Length: 434
Image 1 (tube, rainbow, N blue to C red):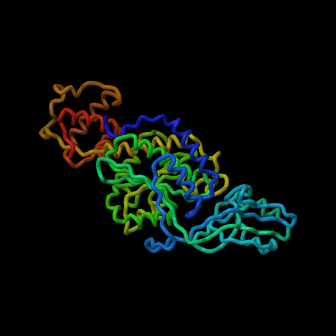
Image 2 (cartoon, rainbow, N blue to C red):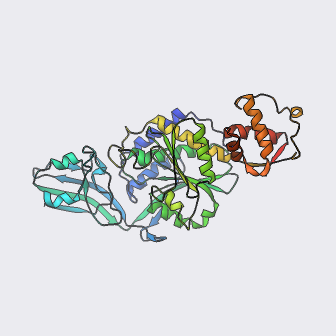
Image 3 (cartoon, one colour):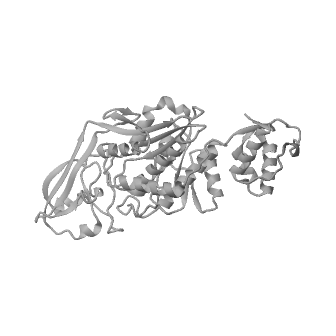
């Protein structure tokens, strides 16, 4: 049996991932604070995550871990004492990382602190002010337009104090110390696709890997975006040389087609493996060239880090109207989409696990295969013609230089067919791993 064999009921896992996202959805997360900790502790109930606390003021390359932000309540009341904006109803109503305030003011004074989406008047935007002291509320544009001149009570019961930044990680040992990195950001408040779908997929992927016998060591990191990733990298510099490749997981629950964003090099193993799997699914998908904008793939691609980390999402960030709004809720994501995302991740890493380089033990012309029983037709290899062509391609390319993915791409055959016949040829001692 090939290592990292996947025998999962993905529809069942899809529902399980959806349920985890649903459980996490109400929590008000940020780049620090108790909402982030609560999220990671719930993940800890699913997989044995180790939590790390990095104190405020800790240098992280050119950055410093910020003060910890926590919020208890926030609202705007009109002169009749009615709450017209209420954090308890939707945590997107508060500008994330708002400084505390408790005062009264006119609409004219309040208006510069209200954020809306004029083009989507019934949705609440998600806005942040992490590194600039500010306060504010996010509302629907329709609500803003309906506000009368009045005397408003404005309360944000929050704190910005010395504390720490929290991240969680799980290391799954493999036969090799070479590491594959899986990174999910976990700092957004109630946004289902952007944040929670990625967390849920990495949790289930970690469970599948832990139940197998992986060739590589897997490192699953759940961290706030940007500053969290930068902090993790600065705290783990001595380990980075072990990272062979990685993937940033996000936006994996919407019904759109899958999208793969290439590494900076564009031809790393993670690029080749991901695009091979996507092509052979026979479903539409997007290929995105690298850009130093997006999620934390840009941190991994910085000059001093330079790790080959790709990003597999469904609809990319900013490319669906619900992105960073209250419409990115549990109705936007589906168990089926999350199951499909998980199955694709599994297929990509199964390919990488089984991608070996072989050398022929009979390099002078073709070896006689008939006497070794290698021309039989067996199930699971496609058509007999595909299997025969796969054997011939593997024998021809087994010079100790080409990996199996090279061969599959050149032969225009699915990787699993090439890997399967290579295992047969190795068992018959016609070729050997190098």
